Image 1 (cartoon, one colour):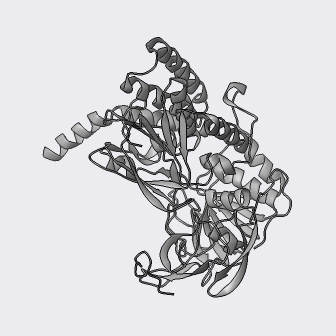
Image 2 (image 1 turned 60 degrees about the horizontal axis):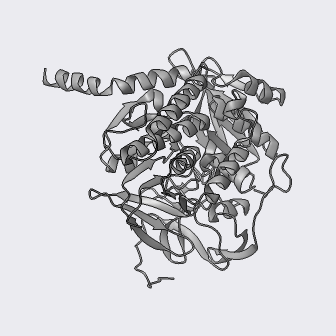
Image 3 (image 1 turned 30 degrees about the horizontal axis):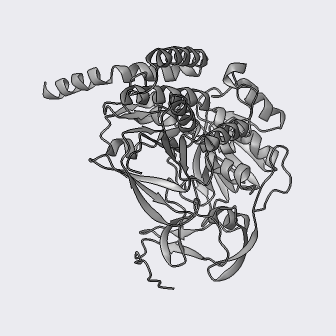
Amino acid sequence: MNKVELAIVGGGPAGLSAALMASKLGIKSVLVDENRRLGGQLVKQTHKFFGSYEHMAGVRGIAIGRQLSEKVMADPNITVMLSTTAVGYYEDGTLALYQREPEEKLIDIKPQTVIFATGARENMLAFPGNDLPGVYGAGAVQTLMNVYGVLPGEKVLMIGSGNIGLIVTYQLLQAGSKVEAIVEILPKIGGYIVHASKVRRYGVPILTRHTIIEAVGDDRVEGAVIAQVDEKFKPIPGTEREVDVDVICLAVGLAPIVNLVWQAGVEIAYIPELGGHIPWHDEEMRTNVPHIFVAGDLAGIEEATTAMIEGELAALSAAEFLGRGDRAEIESIREDAHRRLEELRLTVFSEKVKAGIKKLQNWKELLKQRAGNLRG
Amino acid sequence: MKRLDDHPILDFDRGEKVIFYFEGKPIEGYTNETIAAALHAAGIKVFGYSPRKHRPRGFFCAIGKCSSCLMVVDGRPNVRTCMEFVRPGIHVRRQRGLEPIVKKGENDE
């Protein structure tokens, strides 16, 4: 295992696309994922994708995940290691892997290049009782009902009306739960109106300018207190009311999983528009560490479709570093990838991401300025 | 809670039905379910207690990132039950705060 050209950490949409692109350029890779099967969050996405046909619109996330996984599993250039967690990246370039199944063992590899596609984790929200069993992330709710077929609860309060909040609400209804309400602190619904209309048709109220005050219950969620908020997002006294629910589902955003890249010496920027702490990278997905590349939600919270293209770009950059692949071919694929990425980022929801990317590009300048300010 | 029998979009490959133990009592689970999913299906939501204030802990992220679902499995503490799959006959119990790490081969229960 010591002559690994490329290691890819994370077998979601970004990592899978990266492995396939690397293989296309003749690079052998090791793809590590801590789950029993590939696909990342696609394995729980039962909804159909948006956008144009070229970008897999109309296809369910689970189907996209399955297609990509099958291609990867059948590819002789890709060695897939499942149930394996990358637990550390050390100064001498060792990537430490902990395999749980079929037998438990630690494996060290020394890859020449690494693409980190570790994805994201769910955000918490501060309110009394937020640690009670029954307060679940929206992704966790999806995992329970869409991967394991277990109903998360009978009556659910959804926090957040972005696309995830709206889509997961619909999926809960499909599975047979009741969603008492969707609470949104902003004055307007965050996600696509088609999704909002769909859940409203099922009678789920979307309460804008509302927030959760506390979770009720001793050893599990037995209810929630919600209230209206004013222009400054402060709860308005007297508007509190209790809703009878056994699950409080948080759909309040995601944050990149940066632990490993941070350890690997990649500079970490703080860009709220992209999810908070993210690895510094350029538009070719290169970081400040020459042999380390990033892709997907780790590089900024966005969509599975953009993650797949970022995976391709990261693989192209890794190929370039390794001196592999035909130069002209790399350039032409790269150009096409950027065109597709631009097309996907034409929606209103991409404005935030684009602003974040701009900030990221100015990050080093910003750092210098800040250091100057501190000294001054 | 309950397992879904029919779903408009999905079919579930649950694997083999097996018995495992929660706090000494037998529980039904399936080999393609994580311990956390099987416990949830059995209506068990409290997976442990926090170290200082002994607050009940259940699962939260389901992808092995938040440490909220740590339990003691076959004597080994800090097992992420949202990542670990059900195996026949395993003994699962609630974790109480930070429990001592056992060395390989040792087993305190």
